[in-house]
Length: 431
Image (cartoon, rainbow, N blue to C red):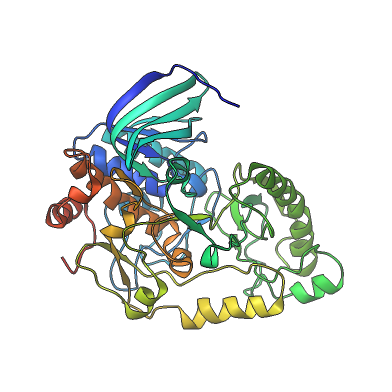
C-alpha cells in the first residue's frame, strides 16, 4: 500500500527534540538557553515523561554521596519541586502536578516551542542526513525541518523510523525488563506502617492465592506531603514496549493487578487498611526497549572501572538495576546480587559518560539522550533513571546548539562543549 500526501512545513528550527521527558526537557532547555530555536514534540499532555504522565513516584539519587552529579538543569528542577527535601536524599518523592508545572515553567522561560499530543510518525533521510521529520497531531500531519535532531523518545523511535541501527535486549534477543504501571494512593496511615520490606509477606500471599504472579520485587510506596502517595508495585511480565497491542494489554493488566496489590497490603500489613487507589498512570513505566547504536557504546566494564573519558559530558553513579525478567526465584536472587552488591558503588564513586555515546552512528545530524542512548544492557539499567537522563539530555542540547552551525554532530569541538556545559552548571571534574 502506497500513500502520498503534501505536507505543510510547520516548523523550521535549529534543533528538534522528539520526546519531552527528563532528557528531552533538559536537551530543549539547554539548546534554547544558548539562543537556538527549538521545537519539542511531546506525545502526551505534559512534559516530564515517566516522572509525570508515568507517575514514577521518586527521583533516583542526584549525587554520589559526595558530589552533585545531575547538576545544572536537572538540579534546578529538583530544587524547585523538592524545596524541603535535602539534596543528598537517595529517593526523593515526586509531587506529580508540581513537577508538571515546573517543566512547563522551565521550558517556557527558556523559549522552547513545544506542542503536546504531537507524535513523530516518520523520518525522511538522504543518506546519513535527516532531511525532516513528519509529525501528527490534532491539526493533522506536518513536517518539521531542523539542523540537528535529538531522539529523547526513550524508545529510540526517531532513530528507528529513520532506518538507523539499534539493539533490543541482551545480544539483541529482544528480551527486556518488565515495565510497571505506577499508581497513586490515599489514606495510608504512615504512623502504623511497619518498617519492613514490602516483600515481607509475599511468600504467604503466594501460598494463599492472593496474587496471580509470584512477583517478589515490589519497590513499594513513597510518602508525599500532599497525602497522595506514590506506588511502584508489580511488573508487566511478557510485555513488549514497542508494540501497541502489547502496550494495550499491559495497561489493562496493570490496572487490574492493582486490586490484587491493594488486597495484599490491606491483609498482610498494618497502616494500609483504609488505603484507596486514587489513580493509575496514563502511560506504562517502561524501563527498557531500544538502545540506539552510537559512536561509542558505554558498557558495564566502564561502570566497573569507574571510567574517565576525554570527551566526558558528565558522571553518574546509580547501580545496575536490571529488574527481574520473570518470576523464577533464581532471577530474583540474581537481581539482589547485582543491585545490592556486585554492581553498586561506594560513596563518592561514579563513571564518566562520553559525548560519543550521544552521537547516533547512523546519522550525521542526530543525537540521542535518555534511556535509549548508546549503552549496553547493563549500563542502560544504571543511566535510565531521571537524573541520568538530565545529565545526558543537557549535554545533547548543548552539543546540538553548537552543531547547528554546521549541521554535523561530529563537528563539535569538545572544548567548546565543555565550556557550554560548565555555563549550564554541569559537573565536569575531569575537564
